[in-house]
Length: 257
Image 1 (cartoon, rainbow, N blue to C red):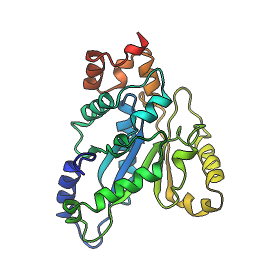
Image 2: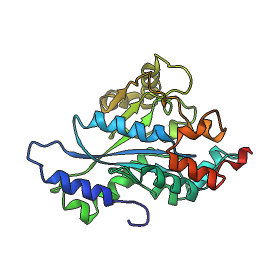
Image 3: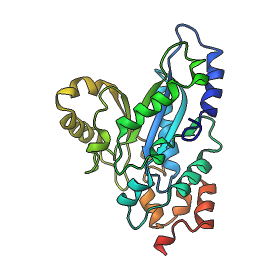
């Protein structure tokens, strides 16, 4: 457990939340976001925070987990611009060091996988957390719910089918995301893709999906790892300042030099 997943912040938050729990209190839940994080940027943290604010209406969100993909997956997805896992991990750790509720799940990273399977990542995280004795102390024999979070760009990617299949038994929060101009039809596009993917299971699954529209005035909404790797104008401001410092010090973007 200690080798692949951090629980210190989760246990602290569960301990604090339990002090005010009553039979009518909201159930505990954890958010999960996965990706290459090649590299991680401000927008990832923002998406988690936006999802937490939304989900807190129904649940007590006690942690958010960032789950980076394996080297095998990233090397295939970005053959000329892949950042090694240890560098990606260090940047994530740096980006969340001042966050009191965000942890890292390394399970996916430490398993040599050439594909991304959200069902497997969610299921494994649920098993790791719900079977942990420290965590079970606070759950009163209940299950800690895992809610998967992603940007609206994920369902619209050509290669997202394998990643998004078999999620009908989980809750999903899709946060609007775009890189240039706002697509006013993004929600309908997501529904169109997912309903076609899930077919006869869609009627049940659609009730488990929430869509969050973004404020167009947010200057960070168009941030992407691609823009950072390509060193677009002001790329340094797209990351946590300490992450930017790490990138420069370790010449992480040297493949573009």
